Image (cartoon, rainbow, N blue to C red; front, side, top):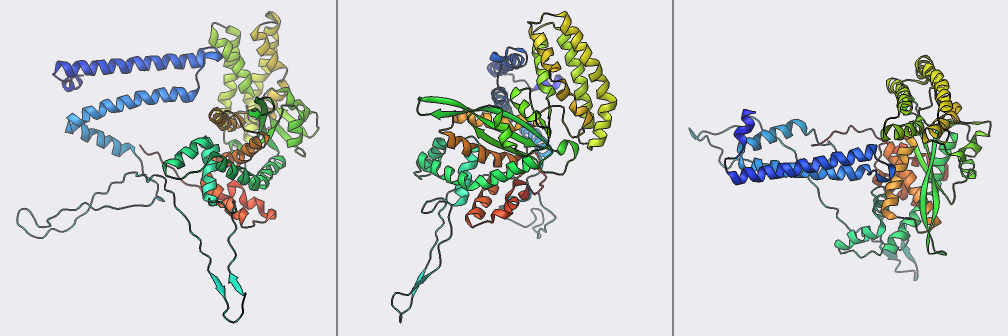
Length: 510
């Protein structure tokens, strides 16, 4: 405390400015806390998206950094203290980045005391992260022509290399950059055109759209092969989300659907690589998953949407339901005010999740054994308790709806206890849908059904790259180049994103 007081300025004006800045910062933090409370406990219509709260926190952090910089500018001791802290926490830069070395040496290498020759005893090395802004370049291809002096009309020339856009400007890497910017970084094509214009490159939005459409057409077989891998799996996740599509005939948008199918066996140590694949459809009818998953046999983990029941009518498919959706209904009731039944239900469901946290990553047999021992008694007690409470309350309440929601899906909700491969919820596929929602927020809608299909194709490859730790930009550029060069359709597995996975240890850089 005494040291803190000593650091306060003696000048009343400086002290007043510091207090005003601190007061503003505290007020902003109080506002953020209230927004977070509203996000957690408020009505759904009033909740805030996570990214909006993060932006608010960034502003506070920026203000704090500015105040720290002002303090360090006035005190050499504070600068050195902050520098030592950064050196301790900043981590290491990746080894694969190119190094540009600069030597800062002394001018005079004679001893300042006796003027004798100095000899080198070591050095201090520091590294900083530098960025070279995106630079466009032009690849020039020359194809000399040759003719025979004796034979008129005999002209020989090497054939032109195959191109993704015949007669067009872009390389495959350029088209890959457009795809990743649009579907991974959520930059609509008109914004990309504005970025290129700042470099003096006039590319119309329609030109970029042409590139995207042609690339998606070439990538269709790869997308279909991804879906085949989903069908060959024994346990997958499924979900769907809205895909607004422009409907020119009516002058407004219509509501299509992007169906998401995911495979992720990592929670139980499975060897199959994770997949996230999207399929566009014009409606949300149950016939869609039946078509997409034709030939699939195994377990499909889903939310409570009734459209998946048609899958369960096939003897070869079992449905596992999601406890996260059950918990969410009770949570909304408990957060709104005193709700002893909802709170008790949450506590019991929380006990199930605690068991899942302990067994995550274990093999299926061990997971099943732990669930039989610990989770089964909780579930055996929960079902009659829910039925008992349902009989005591009004059937028109939200609490009754939440209880009926769980009881009507009880077989699917408890299926995970008897199968160590099944998860307790379908959060894996819900995470795969979030990038779709972000892109929808930025692009607002797809221009046509064909555009929505392209969206599904490219987003599938990008998201599967991400969950396999593969750089989508490098992957897209290489795959497009190989396809243009005539990659055999019989070797599509060589183009799957996980075939490009190279484990790299990443470190945080402060």
